[in-house]
Image (cartoon, rainbow, N blue to C red; front, side, top):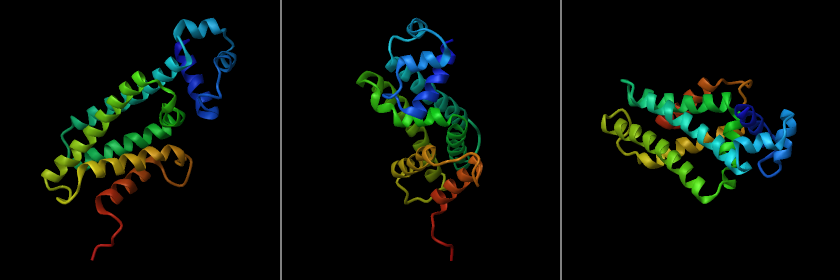
Length: 188
């Protein structure tokens, strides 16, 4: 039942927003009582925190698997971007809830989420720094700014990416990496 509560809440929060969705809306959608909700969660914010933790922890787990592989830094960076795009495709409402509804978490919960988000960012930055050291990437790059640019572009994709649209998540990931690694300037 806990999984059902989480799943329907992601859907409702994604469609209507956290503040516009009541506990009553959640339990009515499942045909259960508020007692069922409170058996698993003390509050709607605790439920939101669970959604956020699951989302970021799943991303960190996937990223750690990518980082531990024996491959080029370019391949690792591509796989991270592709993983993020796959999450947006496969977990679109979760991504929307993660980025859009974070503001409704209290300071203690935000601190925990930010720690995990920072770990994700730092892992990506390390891949870029290693790519610079190994001369896979340009030597004049600022690894932190490149990391933030990549994450900014990819994370915003939840807002516009359509898995049924013209381009697949893989194709969009390739465009992102090409743009980030090669820029817009035509080669001479």
